[in-house]
Image (tube, rainbow, N blue to C red; front, side, top):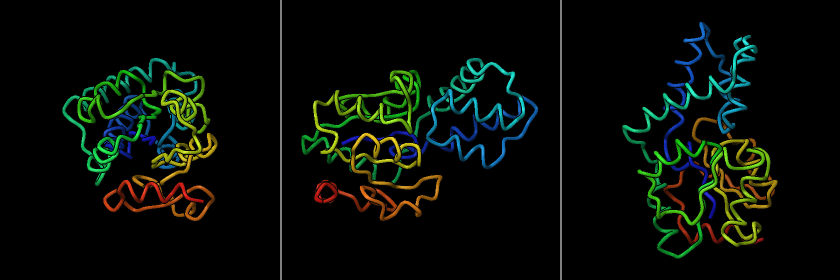
Length: 215
């Protein structure tokens, strides 16, 4: 099992929303809805590029912006993160069944370590972070790295994702995808090969996940 983090296991997109909008306003601008949507599931480097282009401030240092954003999110994460509906129960069921599991996120290791205080460090056999791969989502590298770390065939994996970038990454790697929307409308992906759309993880259990791997 391969789990995305933000918007999939934890309801952190609202936290990112606060930090991103605060940063944009500190730059004297207002981020457009289209830019904010494009940032969902993107790496930090991609997000800074999107923000700076949207604000017409491409001269800004992306590393400095990323640091400021990360610092603010770390503050917000430290007060505790909220599970997405059904996520905690499903993750516990996967672990109880002895199924290898990996966390595959575009978020950097520093913030992931804070989130793991809630998610549980024993919940995953491998953790792949956005600053530890050669390329980030939608590139297949994160999911291929996770499957290799688990020692499993990616074709035998189900990836749970909430973003178009994450879904594209998992599918390109060769995983079957369970798409559960959080901030983005994913209805246009329903029925595509290897993609199964569900409105929530509350109705998903281990037997159901197994059926997704049946041709």
